[in-house]
Length: 297
Image (cartoon, rainbow, N blue to C red; front, top):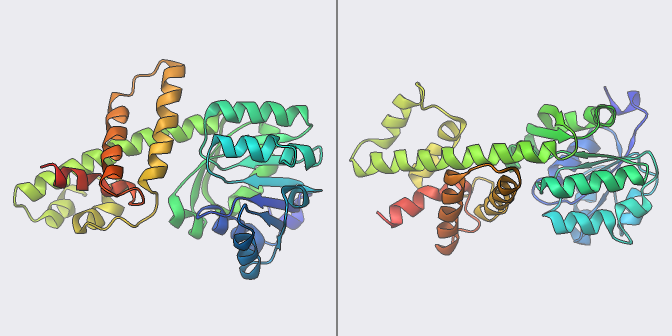
């Protein structure tokens, strides 16, 4: 479905970071009437020079009359401010608007914003993404949604412009909980791959040949296929930063306490990422776990 075939054609994108900037670009190139807002006005103006759309000076101006408002910001506190503040989305978006949040945040804040949106006569979808900066640029993100099915159905045609997979996982908060599952799985996989490559190095094997062999069998994974080469070479500038992963794992561990889930490996890997931060690797990508093993061998 194209924007012209959908009655919701006026959209707002709030948050033009490394993910939001290209995601908003996909919507603009698809032909939506798009307004953007970012805390840094210069970033919004830069975006408007690159894509067809309008950079707004305030959230009020950005969301006024919009049918569809998307946010992609840093954390829970940012969402509360942007949605619930006196100059926020809920105070100025029109009744009937569908609000979609791509921030990786807690399920608690997603449920809170959903309830507040419903009271204001608006729809809310929590829709965290996976795929990193490259996935955002290429329009190949996996989007995990929580919310009411009828509201999701209205948002889905627009989210398709930067999604390779898009699913409604359940009521509000379900998207965030699914993203937590994703991050828990990644943490264990990257640590396992780091240990495997480190062992191969210490055993004086040709590490790349080892990867070529084992990647054809049960050990194969996306991390092995896409990150093993750069891990071997000690290159860690390929996307999702350690600082961001620690934020996400903190959310996972908090929610695990809420639902009485045991995450011993996740808690341990979170500590390992803390070691990476102490080594100066706050902005290295998550595959940098191998450097910890190299340092402390």
